[in-house]
Length: 229
Image (cartoon, rainbow, N blue to C red; front, side, top):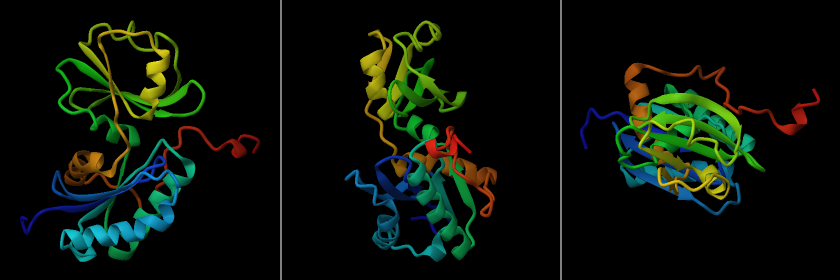
């Protein structure tokens, strides 16, 4: 392990899955994932971080930054992840990196074909998803937004692309709704902290940090109880 490596703690609590990872530059050193679906993110995170640091023989003093999955996703999960990231940042004087959950999901597609699209989707209930679209270099083409799926949500609109990779739990719903086409590739991508490693390191090198005091999750939609306010 290079002594001058950039070590980053990464947190993803945007969905039912709770995960953390520790990276050296743009490589994963180790990670932990809880898939129980019990949404015990707040109680699990401190122990997961401590255990993973021990496994890679690092301490908080070795860490250069903390990154978190900023949404869209579960309202409670996003708040827990950001609170934990802020606590680490303030306690250890670490810069904070916020990464779109959908951008992280785009990195779950391995070796996409040239001239293809990656459509990252999170289930938002009924026939709706939160989605964003990236090219095969993980560059954003369509920003995060809610979308009600129909049989032809994508194919006619993006005829010039060789493949359309659909990833995230929203892709499971999409497979039931979209018309079948050979260009559609369904990827069993999950919101894992290890997917955040490459964009986090890129943002660290660019100095693209969030304000520890004022950063907030990207909900896209507010919780139902706020609609009457």
